[in-house]
Length: 201
Image (cartoon, rainbow, N blue to C red):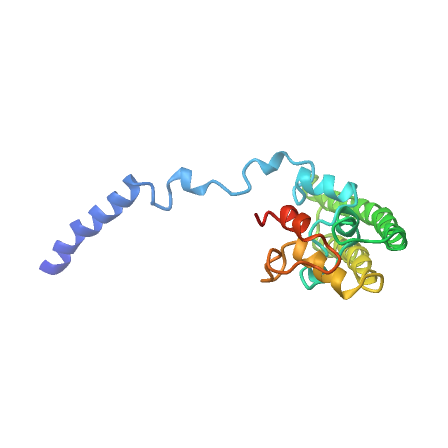
């Protein structure tokens, strides 16, 4: 009994100390959500940056499975056409892939935005039900899948247009892998210009 009485003040001091240093679970400032501020977003599940990216047909990180496994994307190939380098026929073929991808991505992106907006409206208007939720989530998943397919399918078409050396150069320029671009200068490149472009000197 004496031990319990001695322990009680220690426990009380511990709780008081936690409250004073702000670690107590009921301290109001510890409950601030990491989403605070996002409640003003037009669509809560998409940031303004996400919406802008989708509207312009941007990649939105959906092609990482290809990009990070050495399968080049058409946009970046065109941006690096002089450094890879690409000939006229390759540029024309890749431009065709990119233009088709972009138009499809803008269309599919608009669908995804609209479906997220529909879900948002149901929550906002308190009309959401379990059945509506399931249907809305499936529609969103389908739209996201279709959009991801557009981007990955475009990557899938580029290797047939490129040589192995060009693919290796693309990956080196994109900073992938452990290869030091300063140690390996691709065939056909001026050594001095390559080193300058990659900041080797």
